Image 1 (spheres, one colour):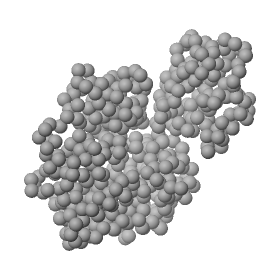
Image 2: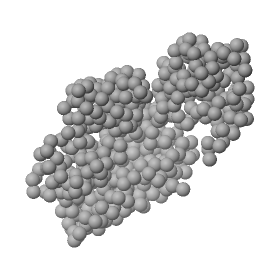
Image 3: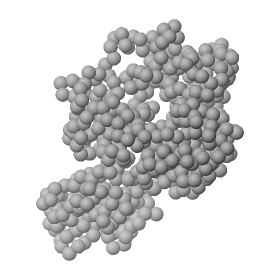
Image 4: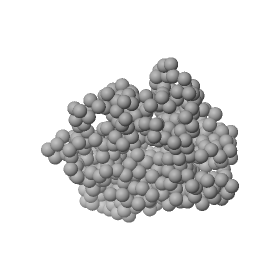
Length: 359
Length: 129
């Protein structure tokens, strides 16, 4: 029997096909994954993401602690701003990718992957040492992602008193409204909000948003949307054995200032010095079939790689994927699909953003 | 519960078979399309190809997974449904109708091993456990 989010009953009522995801009973889709995908690209959809971990960190030394714990630098953050970052091990491998929200100098919130909750919490505790930091898992909160171009008009109808403030939020900023936390973040490549609220209010939020036209969307659509947006999935595109420099996440690693000795820094510096050999790229299949995870990628005269996330793009109506390949590869490769090799074009992700093809 | 029409025959690998004069029409069951999810790509064996009983005669790819289609009999493929190749979603929308896949002329009148709707219901039920 898996864990259930506060919205489990609402999912069943909406005819969800429930599947196990990292020990959680989550909706895969509510009928058609592709329709849900299009709904988010063209209108508005909502996802229950309450299985993700919410961790509050408070204390006088929390900034100092996060400077060590995270590969991106929270020094850059003003109050009310969010940052995407990896948390690395000493070898430079990715323990998890997460978003850190700065509420104030003594109070940050992290949102971590469902499948990494236990590992992350143990790791964070093990790095606490003598820092004045208190770590609290917020299992009393639920989280909804509301995504798509029609989200603005939904917010206007839903919360007329706060709409102006919420619509003024820039990407990667957030605001507290009553007992809810609205962040202009997401995992779809569309505009939208991730909203944390008390668990006992989740269903009333859900029902209100449903009435305002937000379509329930499952993990299936969440995966095709994030893949089109070129966003990595932990466990597929990176893990503890892969550094962010080999996962198209170099932009999230703040090597300046040089005296910020975050965990994994020396391993990354050594990797750079020795020369990075692999990189994560986007592939667009140019022949028939669908690329799947772990499909072999062949580059003429230049070794091999592997598809880390492969699938079908409902927006582009063809197969796309992320793949890890040798660094100095040109624009073309071959992907092994069911004992055939099919040509694919190599691109820099994203594939789709705000509904538009990007390559 | 998935739809399992009484008048059809079935295979353990989730194909359905409808007798159409001397020919057989083959598709995948409602249960199979539900398990696969939205279909996005269909590849069918060529016209006039000869297939053995149980031989792979096509591939279906959904948003989730790929699945082979197996010929329920030995025979010759006399027609393939080009409409589903262009629009795989038809298999989800109408698996026993417009979502048909192949028309086969069997080599033998005798076709052992096909399941009745009751037998196939048991196959589906056993998978649920």
